[in-house]
Length: 93
Length: 267
Image: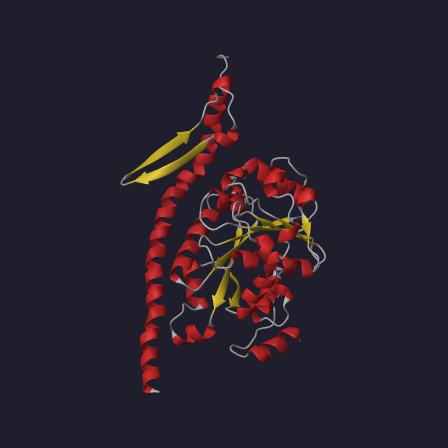
């Protein structure tokens, strides 16, 4: 019985430890999230507008366009990837 | 109006496919026209868990590419009325799912079904985003274990930012927590996170707790959704999840007394 009690006390800690660790890590995850949330908000709209501009000159497929923001240290990098199909390049309007 | 429900988690192996099969079967058992879609292109398994792997001819990607019709790809369940499976492709990769293609298939399914259950692949990449993008509601499947809880929190963040409802400023996806592989005894002993702990950390409404049960493996061995096993405590818990999802409050069951709980759920 005393041995069982010993294990009981020992293991009681692990769930508590897990909870504490999770609370910290989740709080950190969420603070990163709210930073990027503001950016996520205008990305789709900007993506559409950029697409419209590019489409004036080149025929491109909406599905091909990839856009995302990457965090690197203190600053963020906006990456826009639009593959231009060579054969579809057409004249300026 | 058809509802699209994504079953997601971030982490693999927590019970997404088991849940998708059990939940969709549960909805069909209640008389709703239900289809469950495997979004795990390249690693399909829903067909195995549903026991229809030998009946797959055309798949989700075939339908998107126009290589087969939706009717050809949909597999009608032989046990439950109103239940259909749309299998994933085994030979393609996840990029075969395009936003446009998925949208088109879902629109067609909406005309015919009341509930569309999307079984997400693990991870937070393209396949997982495709599965959650058009969802109205989400079941976030979580194990009472640190890595699973953390990944679930990531997925909850993505549901709120990377989906159609978020991007188009519509009312947000309704998120529900589903705790699986739960072991009461270990929680009591203090070496497993309790449902209260996980609920507090993830801060979304809890739809149900599925106890760890050997019957889950037995059911997947046989290709039978666990909600068809009336003797399984996990199956009963999933039926309660379905009831709660449909807005009913199942009778409270006394803790740790499975026998009492069985009689109380049967009333």
